[in-house]
Each structure stands twice: as C-alpha cells, then as structure tokens.
Image (cartoon, helix red, strand yellow):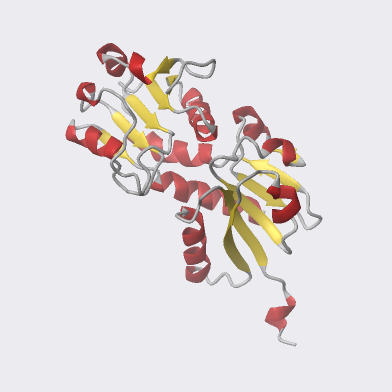
Length: 253
C-alpha cells in the first residue's frame, strides 16, 4: 500500500447558513495547493439549524477543525466541550479545534484579524467608534476596540438593550464625534450591492475610517460613500486572511 495513503485526510470546514459565496473554502483550497499540504481538505457545511452540528457535522470522519460564520457564532458556544478564555469573554466563537477523541474547543480569531488590520490605520483623532450591528461579529470588534482604548457605541435598526442608538438617532454631532464607523451587518453583501447601512453619509469627513467586514464586493456602497467624502476605507479581506492563518495555527498546534 502506498505510504501516502496510510495517513487519513484531515478534514476542515466552515459552518454557516447560505455560504456558497464563502471566503474560507476558496482561501484554504488555494493555501493547501500553494503550500503543498497534501493531507487536508476544506469544505462548506451549509446548515439551516445549529442542531445539525452534533448530529451531522461532528459525525464527519477525520474532522480536525472548523470555522464558524453568520448566524452561528453565538449559538455554537453551548454545544462545545470547552471554550477558550478570550472567546468566552467576547461571547462568540469563529474557530473550533477538534481533537482525535472528538472533543471540541472554541476560539475567536476574528479579534486577532480585526486588530491586526485596523491598527495601522489609527491616528490620534480616532478615539470613538460606532459599531453597526449587534450580532456575533460585532462582539469581537467591541472586544478589540476596548483593548485599544477606543470608546464604542452599538447602532441597531431597533431600540434594544444591546444597542446604544438606532439608525434614526444618528445626526451630525454623533458622526462628528465617532470617527471610526464599522459595518458588522451583512447589508451590502453581493448580490445586494446597491444597499448600504442607513447612516447620514453627508457628515463623513477625511478624518473618518469606514471599515466594512464585508469583502464581496471589495468596495461596498458603504465604503464608496466614505471614499467619496475622503475617508480612509477598508474592507474585511485582510481581517479574514489574518483570522484564517490564526485558525490554521490553532488547528495544527
């Protein structure tokens, strides 16, 4: 028997809903090819309900690691055997390591990816931020901003305990006082590229950073509006690359 076939293929994948567009599968497939990693494959686990995690996904042979995306970053936590301290503090998991005995441990690598991509853009005026959206991704963003001593407020479509403002509250004063604006919602993702979060773009200036966690399209309408006003803009691509490489290290340590 060929020695290479003695070693079972390690399987990795992404859990999410409606994820055919996913960055991760493409990224890791290219990485495995480019780096001559012959014992690993990466696939999408497109599920409708988190209940499928234990019954279906964990039943996959030789599963070694998973990424988690919208809308399961929070729902996954109670289903894991262990959760890393940082991920517990954030309240969201986007990376899971699976041991040979099938035990699962959750991590958050979004915070690493976001911090590494945002830090080079920061200037002294960047003291306050608006986080658009209150889902799992926004939690990692808030965690990083706190680490960087940047005060933040959450913005949501409707008033709730999780939101400081609704979109209709946003006025010139608030936009002037919050010179980092981060879109953590899926609004503007391909194919709905003609949509953008409902903020008063007329008050954006060249002192602002507009950060969109979306990477497809590379310049969303949200970012284009910022660019038109001279703001610094960045999409989610670099964050995704950094978090993916961090996940790969976790899976292989």
